[in-house]
Length: 631
Image (cartoon, rainbow, N blue to C red):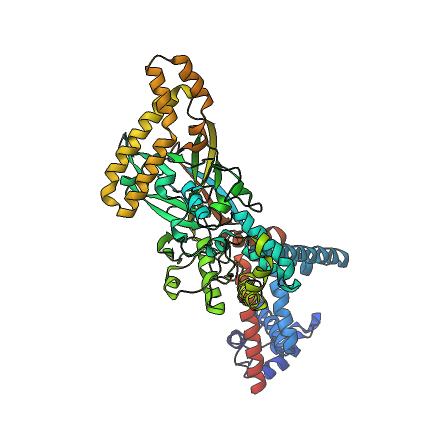
C-alpha cells in the first residue's frame, strides 16, 4: 500500500507523536508541485491514488492539511505562539480587536488600533479613579425616620450655676476664707515673683479645684455645694401604661447620682429605672436656685468663667446613665420661667473600620468616684488619660474625674500647691512669698504639672484607643420659655407648694441618715422663711385688704428670683435613625467595574474563558515543542 494512503493521512497528528514526520513531509513536496495539464496521471500515482477523481480530490485535501501541519510544526516556537495569539485576536469577543487583525487596509487597521488602545487607556483610567474612591472608605450619613419605636428616656443632669449655697458662703466667711475671685487675684499678684519659664504653670491654680484644695482643714470640701434636696424641690414624671397615662414622683421611678463638676461643683443626674425608661412621656421639676442677696459682692463668681457670673440652672439631656459633660454641652435656664424642653431621639448607626471608627466590643460601663456610668467615648478618654497620668507621674490631674480604682491609693493632685485661701496679701505680701511661693514649692508644682501636661498633650483622642459604640443615641432639644408663675396665681401656688414639700420631706425621712434629716429640715425652715411674705399677702387678701395685698404682691420678686420650672417631654415615640453607609461598597465596586469594562472595551466573563483557552493553547504548543526537541 502507498505510504500516503487515506488511512495514513488521517493518522497525521496535530500535536503529539511525530514518527515519520520527515518522511511524510518529503513526500508532500512531490504532491505540492503544481501539476501540468498533461501530467495528471503522474500526480495520481505519486499521491498514491487509484486514479479515480474522488480519490484524487480526497487525497489532495489531506495533502493540504498535512502541508499546513508540516509548515506550522517545523516553525520556531515563537512563531507558533504568535499564531495562537493571532487566532485569539481573530475570534475574541473583545470589541474592535478582531477588526485590527482582519482589516486588510493599512490605514483602517491603524485607525482601529488607535481607537482600541484609546478605549483601553480610558477604561484603565476610570478603573483607577474608581478603586481610589473605594480605598478612601468615604461614608455618607443617610437619615431615616422610624415611627412609633420607643427608646430610652434620657438621663437629666441639673446644676446650680452658683457653686456655693447661701449656707456655704456663711461658713466660708466665718472661717475667714476670701472670695473665689479674690483668691485668684492674689495668685496673679504673686506670678511676677516667679521665674518667667514657670509662670504659665501658676495659671493652673485659677480653678475651683485649687480653691477648694486650699480651704481650711475645718471645712469639709465634700460638704460644700448644693445638695440634691436644696436644688430639686419637686420632681414628677408621667409614663404610658397601655393606653393610659400615669404619674408618679421621681423617687419612685428612678434614682439620683451626684457628679462633681470642675465649674459648677455639685451636679445631680436623674435616671429612670430600666423597666420604665421606654414608657416615660415627660418629666416636670421645680428647681430652687438659692439666689439670696445678703451682700453686695459675689462670693463665688469668677472673672475668667462667664458661667459663674450667671443666675439660673444648667441642664443637660444625655444618653441613659452616661457621664454628663455639663460644661461643654449643657443649656442655661433662667429663673422665674417655665422652660419647656421637647426633644427628638437620634439613633446613630456607625460602621466599623476601615469605613468608620466604631467598635462592637466596647465595655458596658465606666466607674468614676464610686458612680457607675454607661460607656461613652468621652468618658473612656477621661478614664484612660487619668490612668496614664497616674502611671507616669504618680499623681491625679484636677481636670479629669477620678476612676474608682484609684481612690484607695491616696494620690496627690498634680496641680497641688499649698496657698491657703484665708490669706490677705495686702498685709502679708513678703511673708506669703517666702512661705508659699519659694523656689522649692514652685519646683514641685512645675515638675508634676509639666509631667501631667505632657501626657495630656501626647494622649489625644486618636491615641487613647477609645472608640464609640456602633449604635448610640443623642437627644436634640427644642426649647421654649415663658414667665412663671403669673402674679395672680402666685400666692395660692406658694401655699400649696410649701405643703407638698413638707409632706414629701416627712415621707422621705425614714430613708435618710440623721445628718441628712437635719440638713433637709434646715433647708425647709429657710424656704418657709423665704416665702413667708406670700403667706402675709394671702392673709391680707382673706382679711379683705385687697389693695394692700396687690401692692405688696407686685413689689415682691422673691419667688421669681429663686425658682424655675422645667418640663422635659417627648412629643412622640419616633426615632430619627442616621445610618452610616459606604459611598462605594464592595458590591457597588464590582458592579461599576463590570459596567466600565463592558462600555469601554466589551470585556465580559466570556473573555476570561477565552483568555484561559489561549493560555491552554500556548501551553500545549510549548509542551509539544519541548517533546519534539527531546526526540
